Length: 280
Image (cartoon, rainbow, N blue to C red; front, side, top):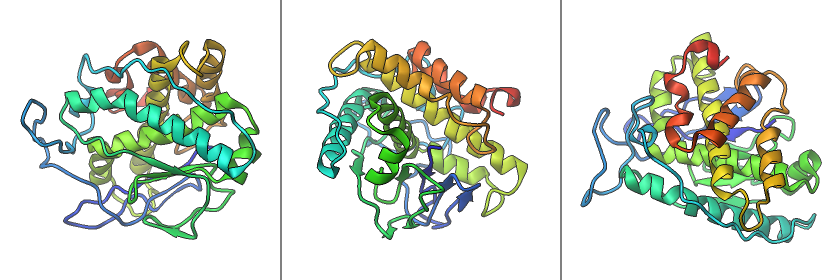
């Protein structure tokens, strides 16, 4: 199961939501760049600023696309240095693909980093256990933590699975930069997401990350190191997880990935505008 540690706190409040997502996702106190709610951004001459909106976030407007990229990825191996090299190259390619989308709508694009070692404490607090996560994103230090032993235990040397996991976690980074995570936090009512309403918000976060991950795969497939076979398998991998109260049903985990892969624009990933029966 893919998991994410996300910082969704407002600078003014320094309150973190969520704290724990049914053993699959954790959030901790930190900071996230925010704009005034409802502030329209984009356009030449404006400083990039996150927009704290969900379904109306500028990133999800019609016609916003990723760059077509050719990812030159090194060999995937079991040594820490080999995994670090593979992930770092992949995250650089993700940065390149997402840059024009965030630039177009005037939102931040702070580069993400990746680590194959697990800190006891990060900017998001204590790390989750191996049973709680395979990989996770911490918005406090904009880092994807993909511990080598956890990832190898889950994915072995399956390039498609590593690709799908890191692309999903980077999707959370995009949500942070755009202001979507902060907007989601504003709508949550309990610190541990125990309410049905909060769980529904978390599902929309996670399903959107699947969609964003597959949208990236579509931008890279058939070029460089992402062959059509690898890319298609990565999209299919989003449908391997069991039904989950926070990540959604297996069918919807896959259907939102397919929406991103075939949709071609970020608007295809607007889980916030979807009817409830499409995000269960």
